[in-house]
Length: 460
Image 1: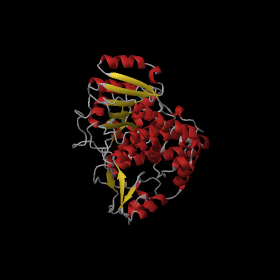
Image 2 (image 1 turned 30 degrees about the horizontal axis):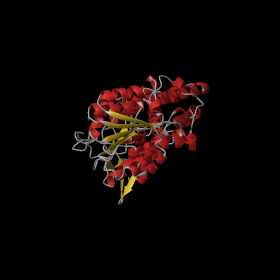
Image 3 (image 1 turned 60 degrees about the horizontal axis):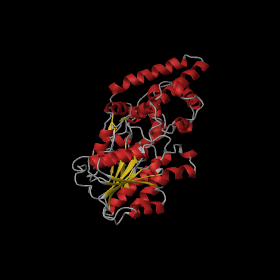
Image 4 (image 1 turned 90 degrees about the vertical axis):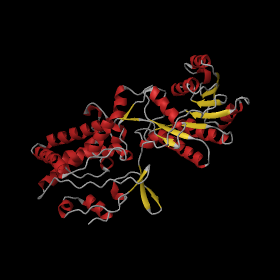
């Protein structure tokens, strides 16, 4: 049942399989932040002279009344805009100390903490430091991993250890949705953020304060997102269904998180129209299935798609061999471009490997689904791995389609969708254990993969 479910993440607990689901934070899990921070205490902000760190520092002074700040960054007072930031904060009534330090160095972090005034002890930490070193997993080097893990992972761990007995009121970590959803080309960054999410859960289990904010995209460009152009941002919205948070929205979510009962939150703004469209196409990220339900598939809704696919195969068969290759290559490139958010198929090179184009596992499934609908064929989830370039995949599709169209009997059909797991408790859902019976007519349309998957689920 696990293998045939189509889920990409499964946890086995006490004889039952559970899958992750994002749920709305509510019912007391998110509260206000009034009184959480002591204005007389000191708040340390890593990445404090960066764009996001500076926004948080201003917010702490203006809204929370914080009067002592320690802003830590690699460049310290030499960072662009640091002097103006300090002047603004001090005009608001705060005393600010800017320190140049590498938070990935435990001794450096200890030295920063030792400099906090005894009269105004450390009461809160906001760990907003982070570095990107984009690259797919196969292209990672130890240097690139260290560049990302140093400020994010090591920095968080050093702050955790060195403030464990400080009696903090708040320990806030800026994480990223990359560690929750996955993000193409950000394997090290996603892993680093997943680590700090786990660290905060560990703190909570130990009775220590902590909340990790796995942020979605901020509209305010920062050192992490400043290189994104309008096309890249549009791609994030189209693929992930996430819209950019305004600074006001993000800081309001920061405030709400300070009083949260949950250790890990995903503050983001979702585009429900995009997500519903993804669900209808069978391309919704499994994590969001508890928030957006795909429409129920019926013979009435399946028939037009099947008819279109049958017509496509007939038109293909009438073309010359060269025209068939071109038609299928255009189909593959156009579908791949749509998944990645490109304006046209020109953004996808015919000989370029899919993983080099930016495809992750979710993107590969979305491409498979688009091609399956277009051709009316059941295609494996490993399609882009077995045929790693558009040229190779187009050649494979030609072989499959023309061989099948020449065989006797039905060549286009649809198979019943696997039932959605029903929600059992916040954040997880059990896999189905009692599937609906399937008639002989539906079984006749299944290929080997479908029959094996159905056998694994105990269907008859």
